[in-house]
Length: 211
Length: 211
DNA sequence: CGAACAATGTACTTTTTGGTACATTCGCCG
DNA sequence: CGGCGAATGTACCAAAAAGTACATTGTTCG
Image (cartoon, rainbow over all chains, first blue to last red):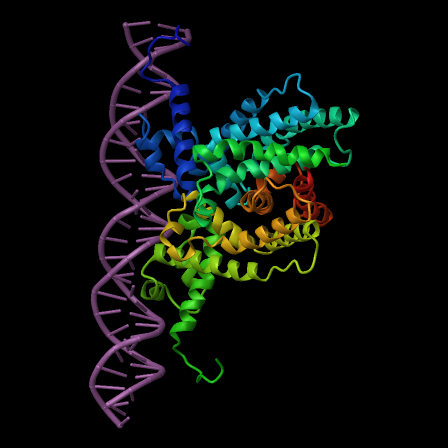
């Protein structure tokens, strides 16, 4: 990294700068709302380079989506519920998921944008197929421990738990503006966060323990 | 309604046709992705009329958003949990909310789109302030009955319950494409629906009963 | 009836925007 | 050390898209 000579030309740097800036701009404005010229202006290079490295606006967007999902997967792999008992592990997983979503709002916005496009771009990224597997495995393990210890019900599978937690955490970010407006409440106000953070863990654990 | 003569010119009809078509197009393509020309082409009138009646693309979008929220409020007022006991009433409310969301996917898409725009347009619609109140009142009533009958915990308020249910139901629609792809599952497959429909009621009722 | 005005259609303008032709420069390799 | 190709910049183009000028027609009301 630092043993490289200082270069005026550096393909890798140019490409990754474009990708980083494009991620910001697409997340801010959506696919159609994002302007190729704006992305270029925010970098130290030019629009020409977008076409040189990516081919066009659409391929750039796809590259952004792919990299964003990869980054998130990396972050998810850092989740560790350690030596906790099943109920506490589940609660902790829910809370870490909550934190994680609030910290990666640009990513959540990209996901919303992609859904507006009915997933037509993500479907072309074969590398992301079944990217959810790691999350599922961790949940499976916690659920299995809970079942064998007799503290969790046995008719709930990892997918359902993941769905409930994801829905809650994504909603906090993705719908904050309309929901906040309609109920005159700021979901991210400091005085609300601790409560909203623990809420989803409470719900999930109550549910899993209800036998 | 029917005592009017047949008109070739009908301001109300023209305006409402524009609004209806614009709702479809904005929901399909987003604000930036929607084309004024396409909206016009799909009506029996012309682009000129959009500017005549609404002033421009942005005002048209705002009118669409306002009308969509009003329509949803009307639909929500039809929710009736009748004579059911608190737990069953809550379960039924959750299921009706689930049905309602699946039936109004265009509306959910408009909401997602508006959130991508950080709620900048809905904030200009004062008429929608506190539109969530009716939903909150119904929940309050069910919760209060449950508490007084001793079947519900007493430290949960209507807002929290509404948040959990909304998040789940909105997610089913809003994130169906990316979530479905990542987990190789179709959230709207007929064989999944009954399970996903009852799931949220199970979760909420378990939680509220957990004292 | 027939003016007056609301409602509408046609065709145009202007701006924006994604994309490209072409020239140029840097740096590596023989 | 020089030429060759990867990398880059400038300037431009053509299509698309929002918005408008102006003419026209139907409807209503005195």
